[in-house]
Image (cartoon, rainbow, N blue to C red; front, side, top):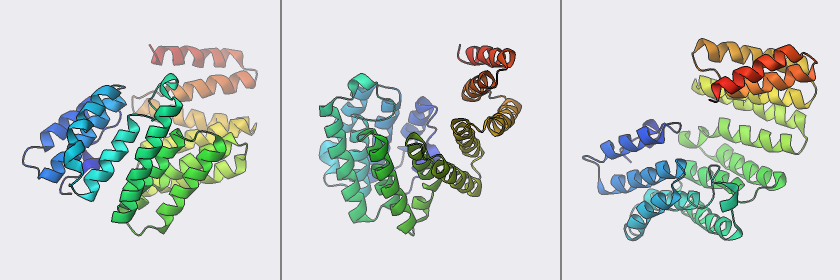
Length: 271
């Protein structure tokens, strides 16, 4: 498509993203407008308004059937996300909703695979971890998505590496495979370094430090979390997750005054 969807997204600010998508509709082709509408639906889902997201997608139901492959893939992807996604409350993840999500994600994958839209095919595969949620199932889906990325010659597909390796590492950590988790988190960090994504590099460092704590490598975990604290504070964006980890780490080390200090910082950032 002529419009760079990724450049318009700010996932932390769905309202802003919606404004950008609406503005991009001016002068867009028919297909591009349909794609933009799928993304507007997604902004509502990220805000927890799944009914609004489905209403927007329902308006596209007839048109998507004869639209481009990208429109159809994105339509089913976003429909799946209205039934199961990381932002859904646990109470909504009923067997019926999970099966609806599975059907839509798998339809999106099949369409993307047939059209050689590899990045969207990977997106569909990686969403399956919210449907099949045991660590073993999550690892299986993440490894499948990672293998798809590694086979793909497409640049957009390769951009998934950092995220997918993070997900594989997380699933391995849940299974107690800490060495395997560290390997994937370090590879994730390298992938983000190659793209210049500093925020994601820091998230990878947090995941490495969190794994050190699980391995009882507490001094290494503290050193890395303190470095992250300095980096985030320097940017004027204190990270509550770093404070939370430092409180836990100092408490495990028997340093209650420093643990209490980070508890207070955590409370202050979450007001």
